[in-house]
Image (cartoon, rainbow, N blue to C red; front, top):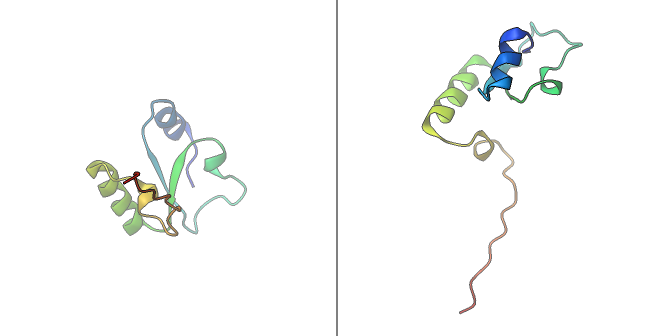
Length: 76
């Protein structure tokens, strides 16, 4: 997926890393053990992730299933 000097440098600087999980990956290395990366299935999904990040949309808010949200009412 993603591992090398550019990925490590980006991770150090807080630059988001988008890793495309394709068939050309090295099966024995998982970059998410070393850097914080958003893993996507293909390049079209990567383009959507880039667009979401540029627009300020959280990637976690787009992934399914959504996390549970606790809703409470203020005392009336």
